[in-house]
Image 1: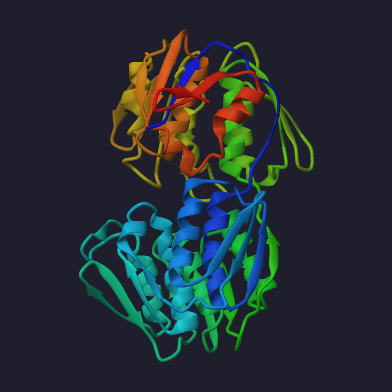
Image 2: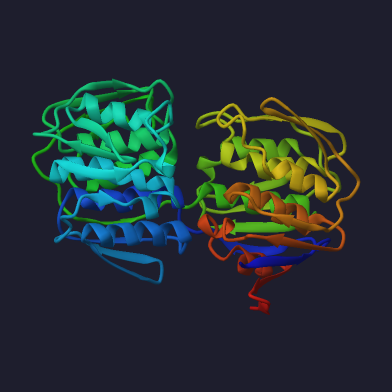
Length: 421
């Protein structure tokens, strides 16, 4: 398995281009199943999860080609409505194909994420939404088996403002007869981007970016070309990298208005920011100020930036509290940060962080995507060498992060089976 070797203590300086959003690309790729034809999707990041979704589309019958951050997807012959366990277990976003398959083919067989039994899981919101639209669902050997004689519009209230459920229901509703209203819908930029893509396909959608989304079903949709929004989590991660190393970095091809809460917290922590239409420049101060954070649904502080913030606060001059209200058990990075010398105490869904003067390099292990990012950030600021193991996690959401960090002067190398490259 690949690993990173990082020599810390180098202030990052320079310019880095932000890639397209993974969390926008995946549902948009699934949405191409709604209408047969050829799509060209630009600014797509080259990531493990994107490759997984492309493989799933090929299984369903689509032809997918990927070149220079442009996906060409031909769904003309997509007619096999199944998402097998072998893929869904590696990427929960595979469930995004459920809505499009039901809407276009009127049937679907999609593995439950992890093959788990029916129960109170986040996918329940997806399933209840499909049932509200008129689908019949049953469980067969760990698979959701769904069928319909034709989806019909409905009013659907989401108990939790779920990005995944909002997107799946929205896609299915575009071809349903009548009007669908999603209450307590997700407001995230990725959902807005999906909505704009569907509108380009001919969908009638109102209320994007608000808590109430209204979809008027249409008879048919058509293929289109589209450009994905920038990845706000990658942007936030590189800004933290600049601050935690005491550096000066400029991000291009980003969308600052998607990062307002993160930018406010960075300034509170001591960063000096210069913000233009699609660029953000950060200059670190000589100290990191302790800053409390509580995650919340958009436009609040994103849970996907929680781990990175804990790494930053580990070197702050004082104590801070980071609370995750979205995923209360998302703290697997804390024991690994402690191996680097961080002073962190976990209590329920809060991390109490007392800043230390320095971190020291040590072998650490990635456990998930954002945890991996926090370990890389801490290693960049730590004294000495850090080995970050199992970096395949970070490849799910960051496009060749080591190469972008090298552009900023970081001393980071990837090792694959004992070979540096």
